[in-house]
Image (cartoon, rainbow, N blue to C red; front, top):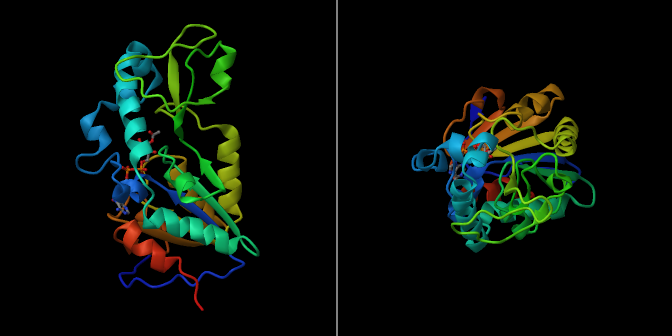
Length: 251
Ligand code: OAD
């Protein structure tokens, strides 16, 4: 693994197959809190209470207070230069290459920046679904931008609490999204992870899959993450400062 401090283009070819994994760090410069950095979300809130199903069911109002706040905040935030650089790369690879953006973020900023082939493996802040597994509406997430404030919304079909359509601790990823992510990683020749601490699986393991097929593995992150040694190259620093140059096409 080499640490690259000069910010230079990765010199990607127009026929490259690129898979990107992003985490909370890419949105930090848009004003969105990360989870595990100092002052991050898991320092401010008890993860068991607001990011597990039992915690939610114990007190849905408590969880919705947080998710309504995150929803309102994310909808007011704008994509930064790192989001834009990825959307531009996707456009440039459109003709001859392949591009997949796997994101753990639920803030919608990649889509706002114009990225199209996005796999939101941890769901979306802007969708809700019924929390009752027995209700047909549990399998039918819907777009929902409502700020519920101090209120917990109810499912119109069964009356039980609606929940945010995000993946909580102890829950499985949507199998179709998980499969699409794995396929993209196993099919790439360049894998780029951006702004993620490498502790939450299965996303933290995608670099192993990319290495197993001989892909070049590149990491852009402010601090060295847990899975640092698995990458070929580490570009330390802020995503918005590094990515526009790193992803620039030569010539
Ligand atoms: P974390 O908060 O765990 O990690 C954010 C990473 O971004 C850290 O390694 C920082 O060093 C880095 N970082 C911070 N600012 C940055 C910047 N400007 N540019 C580049 N890197 C920066 O966030 P995630 O890895 O995304 O899951 O967390 C993974 C999952 O854990 C989240 O999706 C969420 C959380 O619990 C669920 O809620 C299921």
